[in-house]
Structure formats: structure tokens, C-alpha cells
Image (cartoon, rainbow, N blue to C red; front, side):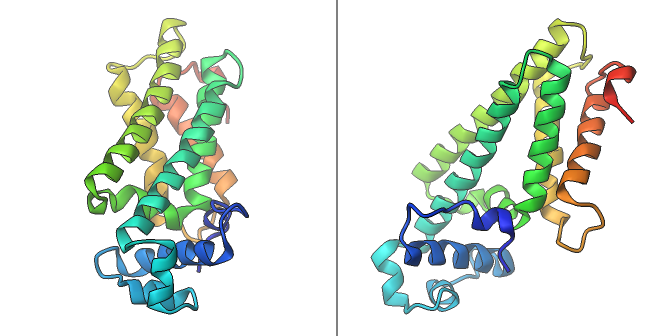
Length: 208
């Protein structure tokens, strides 16, 4: 079953048929894996014939590329919003870690696909997604660098720290389900505190 955050990734600007195919592809890739999924599996899940799928997407790879680009754009937008939320590096990082974690919990289905099926993307699509991933990491890195410059963060290597921050949030999509004991928002708050501790933020700024 498609999680709510995934269903929100493709609003009304696409045709209903194209949207159904994307959601069916997400479910199929998540259950079977990309390579084990056929275009017939996707079309059947969308209530369409295999021939009808090709009207909207030329291949299974094109569906994966669309899913991956959309998921990465969504995460880039949320980290950029966190970066723009004031001048305090501690609060910007808290906002980033909370929203990044909560998104990967709410959108755990698409999160697993976009982060663990990268190897299946055609070369050109992989390059486009890799650029989005670099922009996400650079945004996180800028906040960490600001915190270090202001004496609020203490890390031995800023880029490694940036990758650790994103890796924590991304991994949530691997294990989170609707049966998890914490809501995405509760988990986001806990991860926000963990990230600030990891970055060496002042104890009084981390929170309970």
C-alpha cells in the first residue's frame, strides 16, 4: 500500500493514468525490487494493460527515473527550507534533521526505492539524480560549516559529518512502517537531538 507521503509526490499536474502508473511502480518496486518487477506487474497494479503503460512511459527504467528524480527533489526542497529558516546553525540543523527524518518515515516506500535502486538507473538519469544528491549534501555541509565557524559545532571532518547526518535520515526508510511505535514527527524530534549531539552542539541547546 502506498504511504501518504508518496501519494502526495505527484499532484494533479499529471494525467490520472500516469499518476496511477507511478504509484503502482512504487508499490511494485518496493515489494519485488526493481529488477524482479515487470511492466506487466506495474500495468496490472494500475488497472491497465501493458500496452497502455507505454503510452505514458517508454520503459520501466523511465518510471524509476521519474520516481527517483521526484523523491530527491522533494528532499532537496526540504533541506533548502531548513537552511533558509533563520541564521542560527543549531536551529537550522535541528529543523533539517527533523524534517528530513520525518519525510523518510512518512515516505518510507519511495525512500527505499530512490536510495537503494540507484544502480538500476540509466547513465543519464543517474547523473541527474547524483547532482541532486550532491546539492542535498552541500546544503547540509553549509549549515555545519556555519556552526563550526560560530563555535557551535565541533566535528573532525565537516563533509563526513554531513554524510552522516543524511545517512541517519535515509536509513529510516529502510525499517520504518506504519506499525512503528513512534510517529514520523516524534522520530524526527529524537533524530534532531541525536544529530545535534553528534555535531557537538552545546548541551543546553540540544533539548530534552
